Length: 311
Image 1: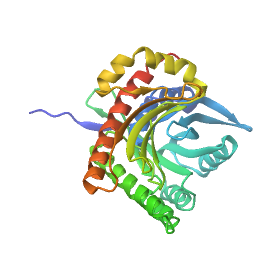
Image 2: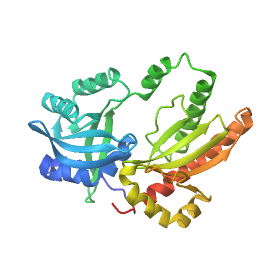
Image 3: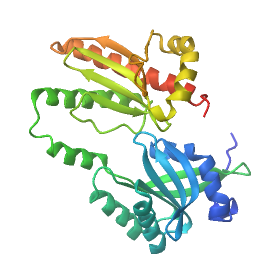
Image 4: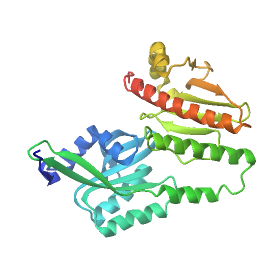
């Protein structure tokens, strides 16, 4: 069997200029970066004014609606670009900072690691090494290597310290969502999952701003559920479209859903609920399995149809 030869390609062979070539490419192919980081970013604009400077890409993390700054550097990292990403983040009020370069010095990797270790859990720094690879004379393929990112285990431990004086119900909810997240993580169909909290909701992004999926655990009335929340900012266009394909959506999920239970509200909700008994370990396990199954079904179904909705 004859095998091809894998070789590294200098990124500037494909993108001669950062602003003119690479930044537009990345803005149009943000899904590739999302895969590498496990995030759901939606590009807002490129070359965004930040005081006397211009940020390469301003995006939004659709799971939080927070701004994300992306700084591109088709060279080895330097102090100038490190200063820029921090400046852009402060001016544009970004919570996530992504620095892409072809090579990271050990000092700059340590700087990003240090910033992650000493920032609160709302602020995240990512260092991403850009590579291009080719087999023989095939088209070049992009590879994003994440060389620095927030340490979720450390952040979870820090958050857990603040949960030392919880009520019994709050402890139950924290354990419930921790178990829920572990089950979702093993299935590997949803990435960028939130850190579990002692509350009755667990948010999952759909890849679009102002609309998200929420899994719920209501200990007061022994129910779990999944619903789509559509903000009033986009409800006038998104909700009628989804309602027009109601039969197709319900067929994909395999259940009849509750549509807009509070019609007077400008925010819209599409809901599915399941009755359980939180006093029974067997029923709790069954409820978790149900919630995992329908959280995945909701995300797969609605993320597909939301992309087809009119803007």
